[in-house]
Structure formats: C-alpha cells, structure tokens
Amino acid sequence: MTETRFETERERARRLLDADDLTALHVGVIHDDQTVDTVASRRTDADSEAELQALSLLATHIRAVAAEAGVDYDTVAADAAAVAAQLEELPVEAPDDHDDSDDTSS
Image 1: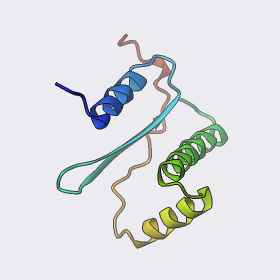
Image 2: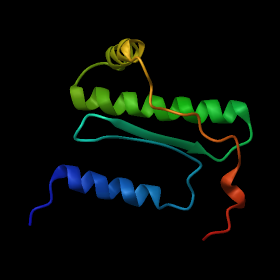
Image 3: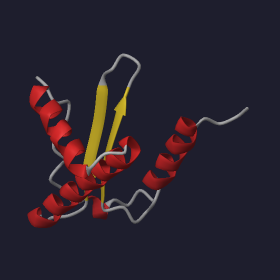
C-alpha cells in the first residue's frame, strides 16, 4: 500500500510529539465534520518565555503556510487575523499554568 503525503506527515508529527526534550507545543486538527480541536502546552514558569514560545510557534506556522501557498508572510498573517476576527467562538483554551517538568511517568 502506498502511503499518502498526509499519512507521512501525520507519522512525522507523532514522532515529533514523542520527543523528550519538548518545551512547548501547539497542535490543531480538523475533522471530517469541519470541527477543530487544538491543544497547547508549555513547560515554563516565566510569562515572557511562555509568550515568546507561543509567538514563535505562531510565526513558524505562518511561515509554513506562506511557503506552501507561495505568498508573503504578511499576506498569510493578515488573512489569518481577518479569519480569527470572523470566528464567533474559538475552540482554544489557554494552557494550564503549571510546570509539567516534575512528571515522573517516563
């Protein structure tokens, strides 16, 4: 059976999430019924570091979408801001404000 690009990238995402050295993540998925699920988490107590990590993740996503679409970052950022403003309800909750570094379930 030939693996599709989607299946290949989904497996790559799983491998990335399995890494032990993660300090922040933001994952979003869209289901067949067009519902969106997201999860965000980070290991830091410093607000400025958490904000920088969140902004870095967003910037990386903007770069990836821009590259895939063949347009400038500014175009993608403006379009994303316009869509966000039109959403009535964002299915996103802020990450818990606790440090997971004391997790001993390895």
